[in-house]
Image (cartoon, rainbow, N blue to C red; front, side, top):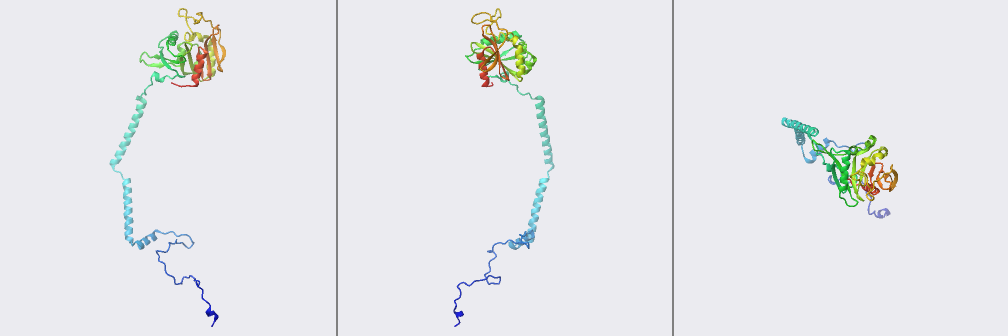
Length: 334
């Protein structure tokens, strides 16, 4: 017996797949989709013609039905475009009239604003603003008063104003128009001209319009003035020029006491006439340079200081100056 015939056959003989091998044919539905490629190996783009052919084959649609559907779609799109582009004459007229009305309303509004509208003016009380916080505000009308009469009326207000110790009152000055009765708030320049203050025009120009005439309750009511300036050099130079006549032009408002008969300054304790020194002196008050006019008994009668280059304070004693500076540094505008 041939040994080769007795050799056992392998359990799993190798199989070679070939195009001609008898293998079961897979259903087209179970075979995964394959991307068609062209001769260069790149994916081939499908055409509309192929899509239509596939639709005809797969969905059993005819070329006639597809063409009819496309014609209906084109007709619908054309009708929509025509409706959007076509406007009736009524619509055009309405749009034109609406535009005319809109322009007319705009012209009327602008004309009213330019020629007829008058904004409501604030009252004097609303227009007044204190440079520092004041517990009280009092209006003083000085219409047609002379310089001496103005200072006399202000002195009466100083003596009659009731304040608790340490409180401040703001006296704001007005004039009244004889024809209309309208009130006008005095500016810093108006006030200095009204009392005939001998100050330079450069000094007046350096001052801002807003100023404050106030009363501070300390050792009786003390007067003070606050001015603001945009030129420290002109303001300081103007104050030096004003020093020789300042006490006279601000009296009796800034004097401690004035005898009604003699109109002379009287010391409230000795009842003797106050004799002033000839000129102001330089002093330091809380690290601030000040100029002080004292009596021959070394009692301060008038002083002024620039706590900063924007602010000028004129008053009658050091305590009032300190209080005003303190309130300036904690400003509350009313």
